[in-house]
Length: 525
Image (tube, rainbow, N blue to C red; front, side, top):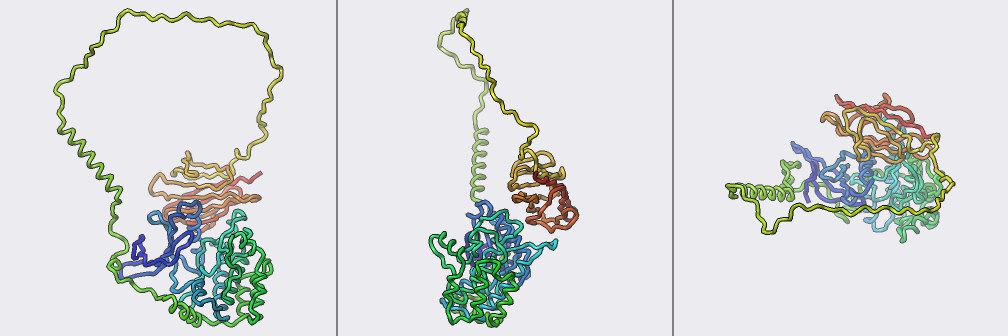
């Protein structure tokens, strides 16, 4: 393959999903530096769909806040040639789904299952308990825990990947959205209810069940609605068909992890981890690494990363120049040909020496002295008819001056410095003040008049019903630090920054750059 994408050289494809495709890539620098990464690009079909760009950027924003050995690390994200991308930690080893297939429907040993489960509990516990820069719980829920999103390295490390469907509880605008893989959903997820940490623990219980029995609790059925109905009913039927030879400690663990009522499950990932330690002894990373290599290297030919011996690998990743597009070459050629033809005509065309005489006509001239006579005016005939007057006055609905329309009262106003041109929902706004009345998401662009000022993008999310706080998603070029009412609020890109009713001061600052905005949230009546 060996194609260049920005500063990265794409080696080979790894996987493709509904939203993006993942490649093994290498970032090269001078002096022999080379870093292998997993580069995920959004598919062109997904780029055109509304909301997928924010979901892709949200994956990088949420995952960048997480730093744990059992969670895939995010290194970079951006957009190159119209393709959004992010680079992640590259794991040399299979995903858990491929490892289950390589075992040819044979159950995993109990100690191997416990080792994988407890490493996942540690990573999920870190995400569930993560706090933002102000020390407030973020309430992150993965929402898509499945074997395809669990990677097992050749050294025996288990890592949770793909936070594209991760949610922050405070950012959920409403219920009713169903996302994730059907076979690994919790009952409340299948109903479209708000997700909690117990939803992730239930999905992990489904994965542990599959490793112990080599069977899924909820096999894929058709139509999908039948699967959702089955998921909502819970896993009681699957627990009844467990092999009688399975240890009672495992049956007790699965009964708690797969309880239909979230209140009866493990309360946290730490509690689930302690239950695994009491259920079965761990095999350790070394034995897990031996298990992975035994079941994948022979079957699938997994090999460590090796440099590709091609000429392209010896050249710098960043090209020295950009080739001119074919359409631009054609346009320039047509312009040159047209200009040359016009210049040639101007040089070689014979200019007339005298002005030509006007053309003559052989037709006779019109007679002179004619007058135009208009027909006499016709008088209107008046008919004497009785006049009928309707004494009933029509009813006119006059507006009540004491009653004001809800839409006439701004819900949020934003004042900014006069050195910017503002766009509200891609429409130019005059002045340095915006008034928001409609309770729906809005997009604001602040474009600097001078080149030294930054470009700022603000996405406004209205408060849910019964609440008054607005949520802001902030971004800027270049990145800047954020201060809200004198308190640090992180840096851009920053998602779901809440502002309370009343006046708030929002400042973007970096070195000698500073932009101040004043926001006024009006409480609903």
